Image (cartoon, rainbow, N blue to C red; front, side, top):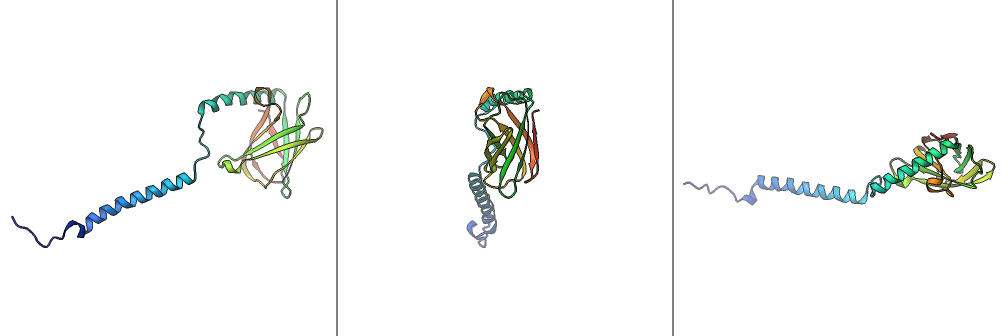
Length: 171
């Protein structure tokens, strides 16, 4: 048997270090992705699907109640001051003194806004947004004094443009 004395030991050769570097690179990239995912959790994931499913039925009852009352609303947001002006139409026995307008972003929970609107006269309500808001959003208008199955709500998906009139109808 012949021994080739010119072959260097494994740690002095190129290929073992090349293969090890691929594995080290994969581990470093994996740890980097883990770090990024821990810093930016997905806000769209729900923890309790059963509770959310039960809440859907309650929300649908509120939607049906709004349809039975033939409710509709028109609102606009002033682009300079952020004032929200809303007119509520429908067959309510007594107009509520306050309304809750929720503006929800479809992708980022931190962009969601909630505005309490005060009745100023008749069916006119007004409130104040802290910051201007534009783009596609889900809108939810309800009476905060009537939560749950006793209440009503108007919902819609609109593209908010400051200064423009927007319409919410009961479906």
